[in-house]
Length: 380
Image 1 (cartoon, helix red, strand yellow):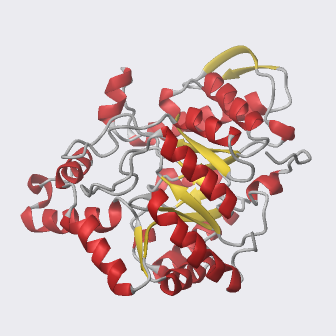
Image 2 (cartoon, rainbow, N blue to C red):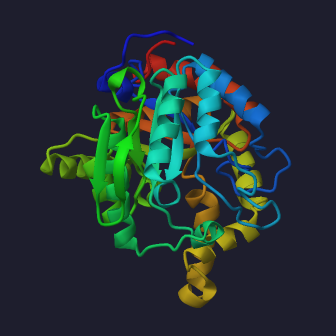
């Protein structure tokens, strides 16, 4: 692990490198990753595979690893996300085994007491010498909350709670040795939280709230807005306008925020090979049972939508909603799309693959050098 002087907030925001476009691997802590597919080579999410991927990504200069906060699978033939590794523990182990990459923990605010979460995060950050990042989740999956005996709050109230939660976390990370916190939802007395985050600067904070309340929360509290929204899945032009709108709104409250997006990469030597594999893995072998369950949780059913609209939504979920925007093609095509997104204002892309270990080496060897030549990535 690299030794470095105490990091500044700017160091953390830059993820300790000069890459204009930050690239991250998304969802590797969950079985099947971000692909609702039945193909036999789908991702395992075993610790051995996650560790091998993290080391490979770290050596290649990948900027961050972003896990999914998931507690229960979606059923279907594969039980999509049925096996998952808890994200703060996962991050701590990977930080101990890597030198450069920033590793996020994805934390459900309503399920983690803020003082415990603050301590867990500081521990991970100390292990990684300033390379831990926090992805806050306000929560939406009621089936998961039932596992904990926690009542899901209504949409607006869950962000009001998350606001107090992050304020309490930041106080625990702050300079005071002792403090009280008297909120509407969270009341803490004689809190003592030591040590503090590594080097004195707090971890990078990200949020992916897609609603108006979620975006407002992100703009007020976070360093990065993770655009897991339908707009970010529609293409480059729509994404560019969204970035401009988000940044403009942040400036109205005196803040600057970086915008990240998501995608699924299938990169092959020829366009036909990439298209054929996308059709095979993501459409022809889709795990429709898990997709149907995911839609049902969101109250998207034939009864609520009608058969025709439901069929359209179902195809959309398989093709774009689970994995995000599909980057499908040759190294030239994918590098061009990524560079175009970078120039439109996107700060980073978190991407998944059907099998990360099998597919990442080709991306590393072919796409990353192209992005360096295009000027959006520094030489590793």
